Image 1: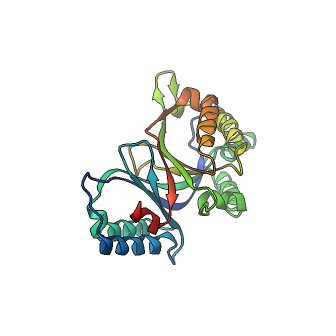
Image 2: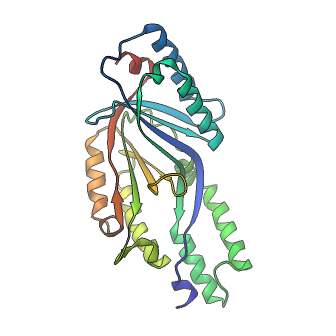
Image 3: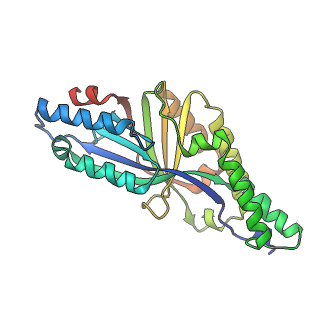
Amino acid sequence: MTDAKKIHPPETLEGWYALHQLFAHPVGLTPNEKEQAKTAALLTKLARPEGGGWSAVARVIGSMSDTMMVHFRPTLDAIGEVQRELNKDPYIQRLVSTYTFLSVTEAGLYHITAELARDAVARGGSVGDEEYAKAVKARVDAERSAPMVMRRLEPPFPAEMPYISFYPMSKKREAGQNWYSLTLDERSRMMYEHGTTGRKYHGRVQQIITGAIGFDAWEWGVTLFAKDPLDFKKLVTEMRFDEASARYVDFGDFWVGKVMSAEEWVRA
């Protein structure tokens, strides 16, 4: 097996850390205007923090959970501070945590990694040698400076897209369906096809991909925002027919809701 055909992980770029929180509202939760006003002020502050990132709160529809909070911050410590502030809030303390998901925004550089692996073999070198490392650094630095990549790593808040859908997913590791046993060229080809499907929904759906390997039991999280919630169904359906999803992906639960202001949320 040549070096180009060996199993290599793709290079990745990471950006903001992300925390998804799901809550259920216990039966009999009675309004407390003083508590709710304090909570609304806290959520408003968290929505646009001075250090960068953003937070959003949504009413979940069609689930045992009632609320989803999503937080993006430049550092893991900043995510931890968000969690601590919310845990101290009297009104939020009365909610029941049903699920959390910790991850970081990610751009997988499958195509670039596969190309550089082939180049290394062509010159008689190998993946990981000094020349390969220099080439990787140059390409990674160039990718990070690209506006489209930065939007994936530091996604803007989609103010004009009030509906949200979130789900975790992992690549399969089963006999005959093991993503991690495929060559980099095979994975690159399938991910290019997968990305082409996603780009068809540009302007209709904002997709935020977050990596969770080492952070959560699931390997990735997908957060979608849209003006029309039917676009969630159309996009996910079409993507499931891509080879990468049809053969090599396991999906977790889906949570769908509508983003609202902190004041609307405490009154809803």
